[in-house]
Length: 312
Ligand code: UDP
Ligand code: MG
Image (cartoon, rainbow, N blue to C red; front, top):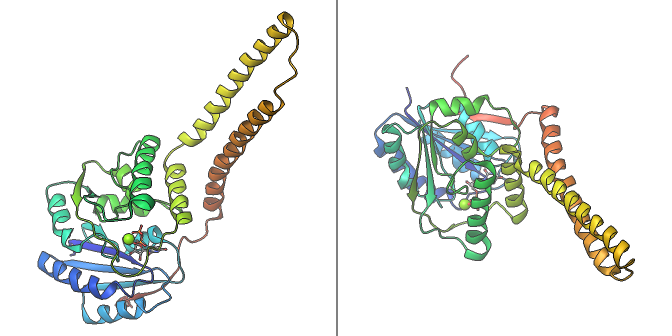
């Protein structure tokens, strides 16, 4: 019987792994409970896999899932979830931005009966202009749109109890955002502050484009509000232009027709075209998601699991 499973996605983290091992394993051993650590190698092209396998050979509580390509952080955690045997499942990034030393606090909250323990970064150490301020804004907008009320979407150090992970395992969506999915199923969630460190080694695996994509997935995957916003905007613009047309009609009867204002008209037209394209894009996001789902391709491919199952 395993009590705590720790799931860690790894993508080209050879520089961070030695420090991670050095700090994580003592914490796991000090928990003094039956525990396992599941690393999911998300198609790393550096020496990460070799280093993970070495640890799996050395420690019987370490398991490694090796992906056949890069399927993204959330899919890697999903695969870890489907393997995890523990009652409490904790996710952690490999880059040590979330200190492994916080794990016992999450376990303690779960012992207290919370089925999902979220965290937020107190004193976040990331560049303000490129990360902190945009992420504050994104957290706020996302919470308004999805109604989820998660304080820090970017913090992946979280604990989920068995029931929530079982429910997540039943979800077969191809793009997802795990903390949001977990929060949807949680009955007694709590959020605690955790310390945050800079990324000491290696570089962030998320560029601006990936971050924008992730947020679109989050908003369209957990809410219909963007679609409804387009509808309502269309409605308001129609009402506005009707009022404007009536005004022009009356003006024409009273004052006569107007001839100036060609460029104003163009500006208004471009504005409306912008709204139109935006609306098409939003609708397209949902259609794209439907397309991804109906293809029913496997969400990720596992090349091997170590140590191999002892079952015949
Ligand atoms: N990661 C992954 N697959 C990816 C991108 C990232 O498994 O395609 C892992 C990465 O190794 C790390 C975690 O997800 O353990 C978070 O990535 P990162 O620190 O680069 O994201 P950031 O903290 O910059 O948002
Ligand atoms: Mg990071």
